[in-house]
Image 1 (cartoon, helix red, strand yellow):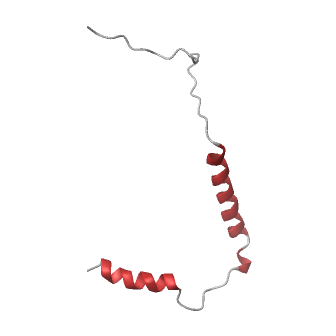
Image 2 (cartoon, helix red, strand yellow):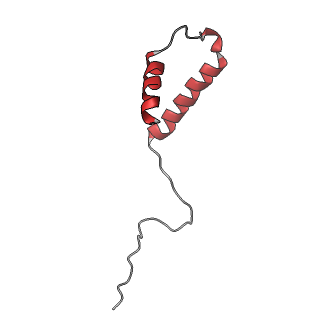
Image 3 (tube, helix red, strand yellow):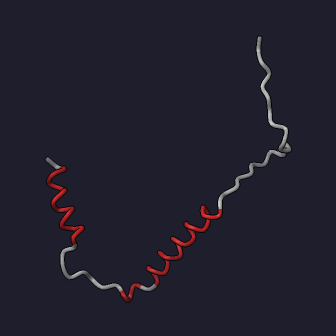
Length: 68
């Protein structure tokens, strides 16, 4: 015997979809966008690296191990 499906009756059926985001879901991308925009607009203080970084040396050692 089929069982009738229960539907929610707490919300009115207006056909609109309601999406509620937490505060940080809007704030964090906004802060990241503002920080990147500031980096793009003021590149005058950027300086080229003079020596090889530790991360670069690490990647140089790991790459041959992965390509074996």
